[in-house]
Each structure stands twice: as structure tokens, then as C-alpha cells.
Length: 227
Image (tube, rainbow, N blue to C red; front, side, top):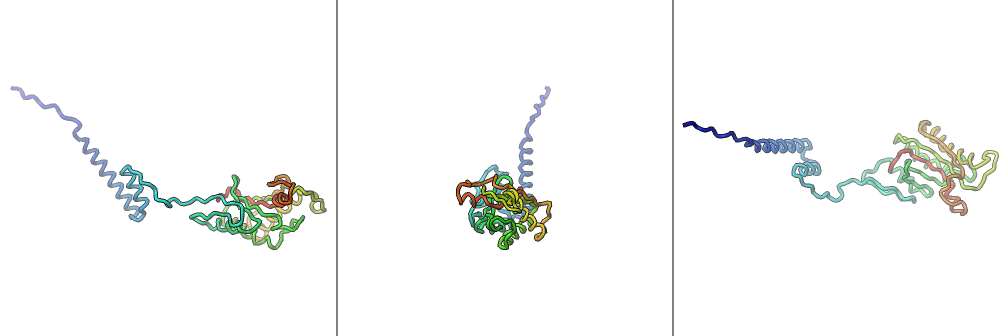
């Protein structure tokens, strides 16, 4: 009598592949845990969630704050979780009456009322202005940002031998700031620029004394900086 051979059964080793995958994942998990020295609980939980396929709710307060745009008034800067020396200098500047610190698309703007820096109709820096500019120099020394200094006036015309128009007055005021930063604080000239806009970039109406006062200003722009 002929003996019939049983047909070979295929597919019986799939459990071995699954078991090997499981062991591999467990091995990777413990290697990662060991590399973290088992002290970073947050990361350990993250890896655990990855391998178990579960996502645990995030604990409140675990994500660092990124900072917020300051409001334009003394003391208006909002503290961040990671305070930097530059941020501290900006905070001190924002607490000076007549100084505004704000974030715009081009960078961080330091807006100073003209009376902080100059006498009426003049472009020579007042002694009281120097501590403010020293703080600006400290920021420049601590970073690689370029600085653009902009002079602005109100719409009241000026006609003097030194300043035939508001163009000359605003430009000379901006240059006086740049010269102080270069000659006294030794900031590289290549990082600085000065421009005078006269009365042609107002931020308020020139029809009121308050508006004119707002328009008489110097703006220092930290190009590319972010709060």
C-alpha cells in the first residue's frame, strides 16, 4: 500500500517574526532609557507613549513661554520663562518715561521722544541721553543685530543757518546718535546707519500739540530682532 505524504504546512512561523519585533522594540526602549540616565521623566514618558501607542495629556506648565509683544508704556514688557540679558536691557529701557519698545515686522523698535535726547531745535545729545544710549550699546555688544537710527520731526518748519529744513534736523539728530555709538562706545560703523525722514512719517496728527509731540521722535531699529 502506498503511503501518502502530508502536504507541508506554510505560515507557521509568523509568531516568531512578531516576537522578534517585540523584543527589538523593548531593546530600543531600554537603550534610550539608559542613554537618558533615567532622569528625564518627561522624555522617558514620551518614549513610553510612543511604544505603547498612547498619548498622555500634557502637564500644565511644561511648555516654555515664548514671550509676548510688550505694550508701549513704562514697565510694559512681559517677562518670559527664559530671560536673556538683552531682554533685561530692553525691559529697563521700556521703564523709562518717553521710551517705547515694540515688535514690528522688521525688528524691535526703540522709540524715544526727542526731548530725551535733544533740546528744542538742536541735534546735540543732552547729557541725560547718554545712559540711554549706553544701554543700546550694551544690546549691540551682546548681539549681532544691525541698528538703523531714524530721525523724525513734527510739521512745524525750521529755518536756521544750521538746519534749513526738517530734513537736515532729523538727519543730523540720527547721525549724532550713530556717532556717539561709534566714537564713544566703539560699535563697528558697518553695523549702523542713520536716516532723516523729517515730518513725512508721522505717527499721529500734527493738528494737536499731543500729536506733534508724538511725531518728534528718534526710532532705533534692531534689524531682525524678536522679543
